[in-house]
Length: 399
Ligand code: NAP
Ligand code: MG
Image 1 (cartoon, rainbow, N blue to C red):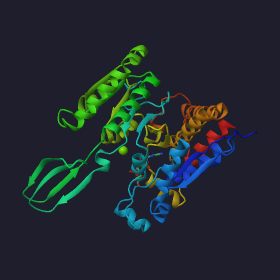
Image 2 (image 1 turned 30 degrees about the vertical axis):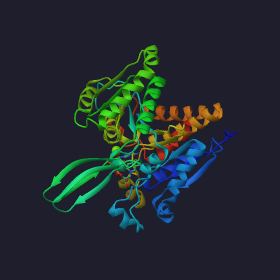
Image 3 (image 1 turned 90 degrees about the horizontal axis):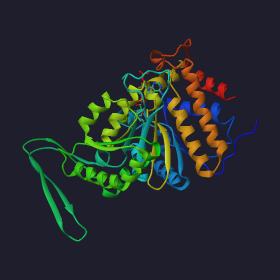
Image 4 (image 1 turned 135 degrees about the horizontal axis):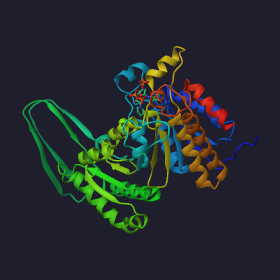
């Protein structure tokens, strides 16, 4: 069989633990036999991040900026325990946070909808895409431990010498303090990305914050969204879709009772938390896909879940694991399709579609990893498979 040729590379960001193992199997069984893969490889596995003083993460971000399409494996965000486990020089920041900060952008998280996997909320007939603002707020905040009685305030020093001050709290004993920020520029690009995505998909857009409490901070997000909504109003009307602003608590209550199908725009932290909720409702974290869309027109695809540490330790002991590779396979298919679209290679984009149909076909016909088995509502007899068998099943269907 002739392999599909590529012109420009995909920036490949390798990662850690069980997902690093899956990564290799997916490349071997699902890509290499069909595509003459051109990739620019960056090893973001923790040992190499440590070796390069995290330089590899910044180099990968530069490469995505240059080539436009990246595909990332899940990576460990080190905590104290990981520093000891890997003998790290220091506690590196989350590679995802570094990439988001470098590329700005919005993360769209959408579940893989499968007709024979029942969501935990039976009313959710259509997938919900979460659009998470991927820049700053609590992820770029400055934090301080306050060790005793103290007066804390916010201070801004403008370039022209003017200053603005605001007291935060007078401590009568120890406590904690945080200062966080966002920029109009990033909020505008977040809003435009959300409106453009909803328009493209022909789906309603919700945006939710807590502007009744954070009147200035969340209030600014609300104002900017209202302004961008006006820019898109005619096009939204033309498509018969709606934009709605609501309070975050109201939006959660309404989402649970809805039938799904909308794009749910959320600030960074809210998006982090609620995308895990939405993924779990759809069955398994392993069905949640994620793409970072940068204002410069770059795309970085990944699975929403982590490195599945618990399974990795079993794998190291030689035990079988039922790690579900779906979201990682969809990271690859998303990147290959985008590369195909950008480079005018219909065969490559078509292969990405085939790969996704093969995954959906296998699951709908009852070939399942352990996480999905209890959720299956199809009529075929269930065939439970391990991580590698699932990937080989897909390869068989592609061949
Ligand atoms: P996780 O890797 O997402 O795994 C949490 C649990 O969810 C697993 O133990 C497993 O449950 C289930 N799960 C997740 N993905 C699965 C899959 N593909 N197939 C089957 N089950 C799956 O989260 P974590 O254990 O909290 O984090 C592990 C590491 O990942 C951490 O070092 C963290 O920093 C990192 N992380 C990275 C990213 C990223 O790179 N985007 C995101 C999140 C976390 P059972 O054990 O019950 O089977
Ligand atoms: Mg999360």
